Length: 420
Image 1 (cartoon, rainbow, N blue to C red):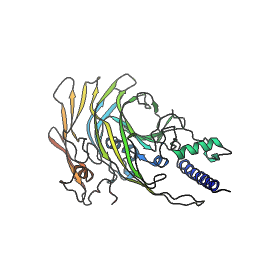
Image 2: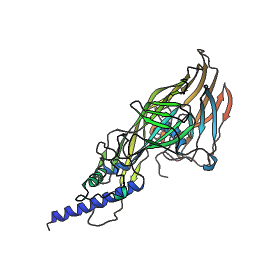
Image 3: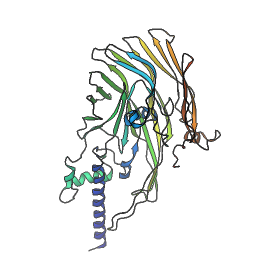
Image 4: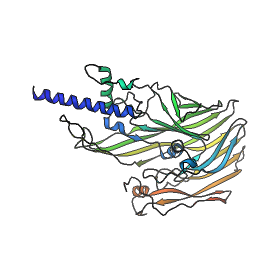
């Protein structure tokens, strides 16, 4: 048997074992979200891209519910509540602290805080963004047999996963609106969405975005989209043993914002937003490989990637109820945040009645920063951003102190992107 034939057989054995291992991993981890997409490196399918910091601050309530059972107190600061005949919408600031995460960035309210006023559906992308076009996932995965000669269709699916043509892991869609929070995923049918935990609401996707109808017949239109474009500088990994590669910016995640609420009797609440954008460096990731099988398979160098995120986002500007004539407006600082240049802290919230240009009431927020050990104000802006987090200090109503906050600062925060 010639040397080239032996090499070909070894490569086929290595490929088959890699396919079986990969498909076993994705199926056992409920990875049922593949789709046809531009071909990418297979190892990049293991990437996880979170939504923008502002969207993530709201989505966190769907991922980590606030309750005493989880050891998280319900800290809520009420601002205003829109009241219709058959519906109410609270405007409030909420706190959800689950520890200082190395890669977590503060919202415009402050670290651990979120502005709960409108609503958002925020996607956490696993691998490639979902396209809602169905997935070539076997209906009976325990019978899956990627054998080139005896089951070519299964082999082609597995080969597509290896080549990065198919993404078989589902994205997670976290929602937060009108006091509700949770998440949903798509099924293999792509047109069906499954809330987790289960709720009796209907989730639909159309050309405008998402439409959710709750158990009481109230419709929520999420028809405004923000996007995050991510590029990566990577070294090592399969097929990249000795060179660096730079991926061009691609849409890695997105958020859909609540634009209108319509009640069964026809009353509505309108939500308006303004656009803004910024760029920041994400948390480096390392994929480690360990050779477990023989047959002459080549070892793979560990793959290290550093992402850069370009955020084109939306922030709440006003909420208006035609039925009551009440409008709540949101104002932001003119100067950039120290921890996130290009973004701005929430400065004030004002409530107006009818055509009056004078607010019926208003709230002002004051901020400072948490600082990491070694922070130096003379450092470059990029370093200062990594070593600080926006901190909410107080909330006043009509220039009278309503709330003042102190935080346990016995342990200094870690610098963003650090490993220690």
